[in-house]
Image 1 (cartoon, rainbow, N blue to C red):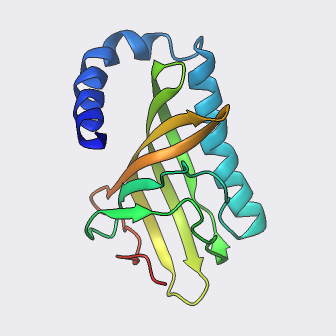
Image 2 (image 1 turned 90 degrees about the vertical axis):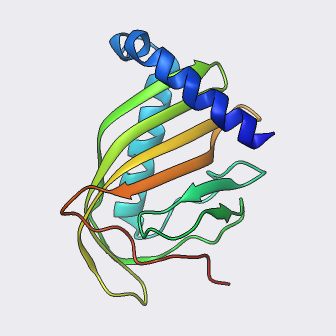
Length: 161
């Protein structure tokens, strides 16, 4: 079912882009998703740990910027911690597909060092995240990060644990 949903999402997204992007600032879903993305990065920068509780109860199907294979991220994935974190989301575009499904595309740039890992000094990726409303809250259901030429992705290629 998720595969069919994904295919329909991509087709619908491509058809919806011209009309959707022109009304970005008026759509409350767009504003809500932008705020969530920005707040997550601000939280991590301030607390040097990932936000928790932002994954859908079914988890999230994800491709990471490390180039590894698809990952099924559990909703109770423990928060990663950092020694340093200066990542910033930029140029956030959101396509509201319904009242409870939205897709965001944006860039992430900066540097970080996850606890126990070597630093990533020029992280620069394109990101796509699919959000689904669950019990009145937006949750990540799928994501894809890919490095921009000249930028670095993450070093992590699989969930360890």
